[in-house]
Amino acid sequence: MSNANPPATFEAFPRRDGQLHVEQVPVADIAEAVGTPAYLYSAGALEAAHDGLAGAFAGRPALLCYAIKANMNLAVVSLLVRRGAGVDVTSGGELFRALRAGADPARIVYSGVGKRDDEIRAALEAGIKMFNVESRAELRHVDAVAGALGVRAPVAFRVNPDVDPKTHPYISTGLKTSKFGIPIGEATAAYAEAKALPNVDVRGVDCHIGSQLVSIEPFADALALVRDLVVELRAAGHAIEVVDVGGGLGVTYAEEVPPSPTAYAAAVTGAVGDLDCEIVVEPGRSIAANAGIFVTRVLYQKGSDEKHFVIVDGAMNDLLRPALYGSYQRVEPVGPARAGVRKVDIVGPVCESGDFLAKDRSFPSVEEGDLLAIRSAGAYGFAMSSNYNGRPRAVEVLVRGDRYEVVRERESLEDMIRGERIPQEL
Ligand code: LLP
Image 1 (cartoon, rainbow, N blue to C red):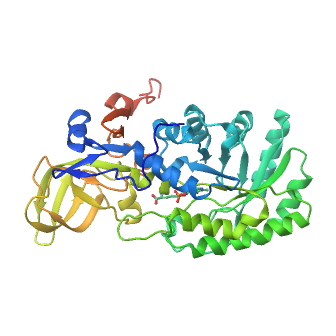
Image 2: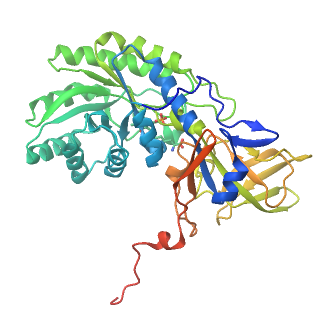
Image 3: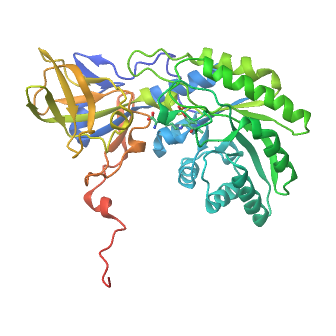
């Protein structure tokens, strides 16, 4: 376990003497030392978010499996694992990262619609807690791979309850038009098939309806259906011991007021708490988003009749969410705000009009060389970054108190072309 508990409301990014800090370190000092663009994470904020949610389920048989897709840096995962978290993985690569970060395989669940045989094998060899199986075709592969290894595979089906999570369409996963899970109406038949297979053990039921949910109702609606299903499956002779309620708890990017961890836990336990099951939760965003910022430097400015552009050295390849979802993340100057406010687009160097970090934003005046911080960047920030436009990926830094460490080096140009070859014979 880690050191002293951070307070329940942890101020990860305080402003002191006008200067934005991560915990006790001025952002400008880190940027000076490691360059920009950069992702900076607060250890205390990660721990506070983890403890807040885990604590809300205290006294229950519950396991928090951090959805590593949100932020898969080994330092972040290892910190959460040391805090007691299990991990929700979605690929062989995430499984590899979780294990490297020290996760207990018995606390790893594996979700995702397209698991390959080699990935299934790796998970079985590691001895994971449970596969969240998303189709009957996948179930047969899990059974076959387990049979070939001479082991039994613990499984749940991810059921799709057809409940609208009222979030961005790209991150809605529990509607019947979505590729995820099996329709809840087909669950009885699917579980019957699982029971008849020689190498799988039915353990649970899983459901994840979407991400960035800011109201409790969709969770409650979906879990009410899951509850009915568990009762029905038990009546049919299935030993359902685990209910995995997925992730999805939203965070504040702008003005959203997501359910508190306590309200969320109350809704979950209100729906499925009397089933005498272990409850697995798979939070990603609510653990990491507001524990990180993305720091970028102003390169140039230019204007037209219509627009004023602030061109920065971070771009959509570094932080894709605004470009991909049109999503809003707060931006602020790292130093004291300069006088004067104007409406700006904050854009990166990538050759796409979709490459913006903020659009039509009222923002204090800036000058070349100024540092800007994009808030709420700890989840689905670095994890979704790429080398598009020949841009090496950013450095990642973890801060604790008055100390910090680079936890992923900035990619070098050589890193960026590693593995590529100019063929000699073609
Ligand atoms: N479990 C499963 C099966 C998932 O598919 C996801 C997220 C989670 C858990 C974690 O959900 P969370 O607690 O983070 O909401 N890139 C998008 C988010 C994609 C979420 C995909 N699945 C974004 O930046 O908004």
